[in-house]
Length: 179
View 1 (tube, one colour):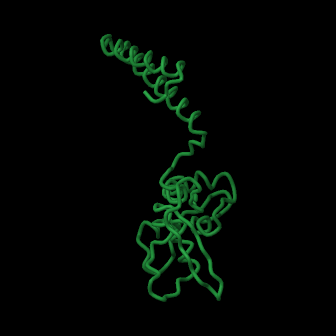
View 2 (cartoon, rainbow, N blue to C red):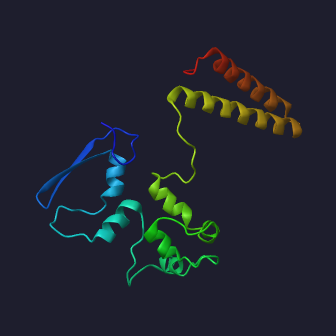
View 3 (cartoon, helix red, strand yellow):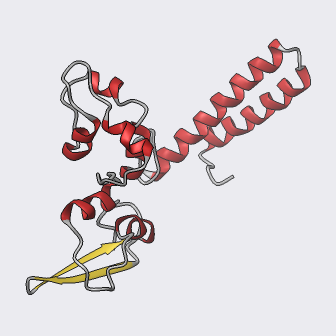
């Protein structure tokens, strides 16, 4: 069974809750489970809905004892549309293209929580295509390093890099992606 949150890793944790007489069962991988359920719900305490979403999506809660960094975020405002950073966290979307520039410094931490630690989108590929793509990227990196080595007159290093690139190209064209 696949994790209901990330839809990538196998689900190893099953969470069953009974609310209003209705049983709700969710299946999560270990990583998503830790991120989504930071609070210990073993006590019969009621968690406000805002706090629950804040825990799930990494949205800071707004209270009187907010740390200074979050207090500074409260005062960030888009100069074009007037949207505040707090409104962005609440709505989950921007009002205009200028919002991206206005909140640029805060976006990596939000995206990191939403995308399991990733701050850069690299897309998804089938396994074989992904292995081929990685191999091509590695060859390209070796070629760039080789050019730098030649420019710096480190010819022995350039020859070693050339040999490594040729070996990877043989793997690529031969279809041997396992080494």
